[in-house]
Image (cartoon, rainbow, N blue to C red; front, side, top):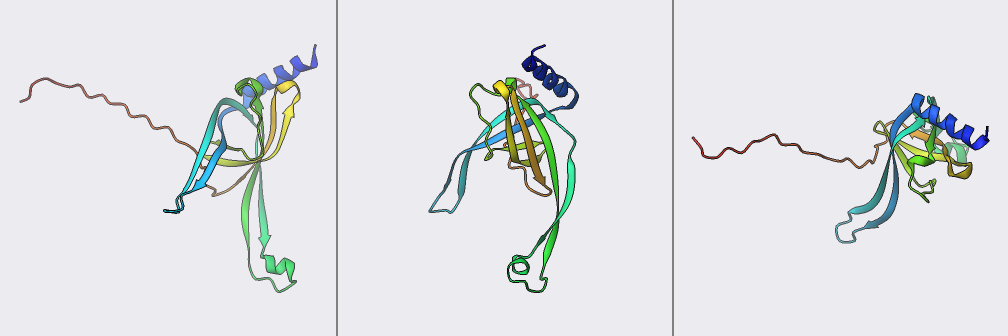
Length: 159
């Protein structure tokens, strides 16, 4: 069996077992209105129906105050925060032709915001192996589609 077809089959089976919808976002342009100070950004959203999302590794991290590290002073303050790291596989079939995943992109899955830490292209554009990091409490910065359905039937005449 050809190794490329074997890799395609493995990705397909993983998608069936661990496939979940994700959205990949990319900033197209960013600007600040000088008069109002409002921050404007234009983003591109790419929806992937099934990406392989493997179980997460949740770690509790601690950060020290910079003055404690730099000046060797007494400990002033720091903080604990939870970091969730996941491996994801995006099939090349689910991406547009000539689409290249970059580190500046981010992923939203189940209203959780993931920053891309490591992006590895799989041979022959078969897809991407992604290491993504989520910090608890970060807003998802996602684009939501709104749909309004009306079931009103207009009636002629009135009482």
